[in-house]
Image 1 (cartoon, one colour):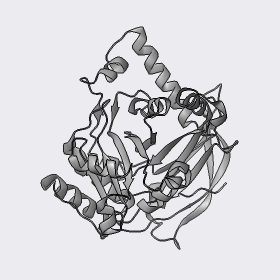
Image 2 (cartoon, rainbow, N blue to C red):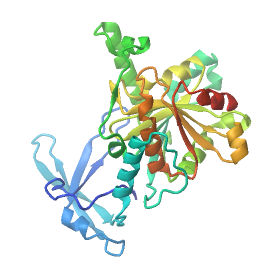
Image 3 (cartoon, rainbow, N blue to C red):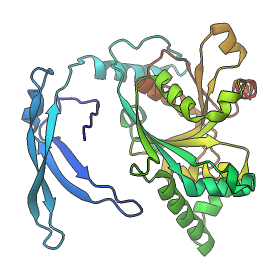
Image 4 (cartoon, helix red, strand yellow):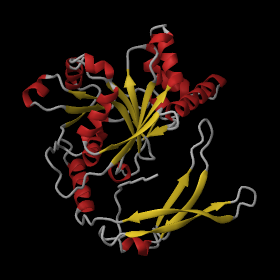
Length: 357
């Protein structure tokens, strides 16, 4: 198979800090079981430094090393064809750091328009269709198995999480009753709930490419993300004044997990933040988002906007970090589409939500 990935890279780090160079790990996929590491290889830092243009790219076959199942010793077996090159955006880190500092110093900043000097990264989003969740949704929401549709989850790779949030994470909300039932007790009931959430998370996010239940999408820009979500949202295609809500969590491993939120019982249960977090006690940020297409703002400007908030009772993210959330979205998806990061108590959020059904 052919696989391409684009990611930020700073070649000026000291060799002592990144002495291993670029480590590439190859895994197999076992449906219903833990994936196994097939092997790994390393491209030395000096080789990477020489890849300053595509013409000077590193191209070659690199042998894989893997540990023997019984001996535990490293063995050679198999190889991968690699092509690596990087483009020198010399002002990129200075620009992002400056933007971050400006937001910390002036939280009211609402920069729109192109972010000069900041390359737009390529993000990968994996969509999964959990048929068992779909059955539960049908039985509880409508009671008719014949109307069953797969339950979709999305796992989106997000860049710059560590750069923007500087290692910040938010623990579970100790003042929220539902979170107390999940995390706050060492009782058998709480342990059972956490185990059930982990199992459901595994089911919801297990990749199944063999049966075409999982698909990988390349996302470049907010419009690209919006179009991908629209392609799966058959309900809003027939309801022109409705925009679906998505419940999301941003995890410390730089992945954003989300799914559609509904007032219907099963769908809402399966899209709770604790489930998307796999019963983890900490996330970077969480809330809900939707695309504003029907409000007065959208009508007057003629532009769709991403509206993203901190509406998560389970984790209760602070509104003081909303500007960082907005910056993270801008760095990943650009500013061609307006991004509104709003507090859950902001009247504007209610207004936009009501306008979009």
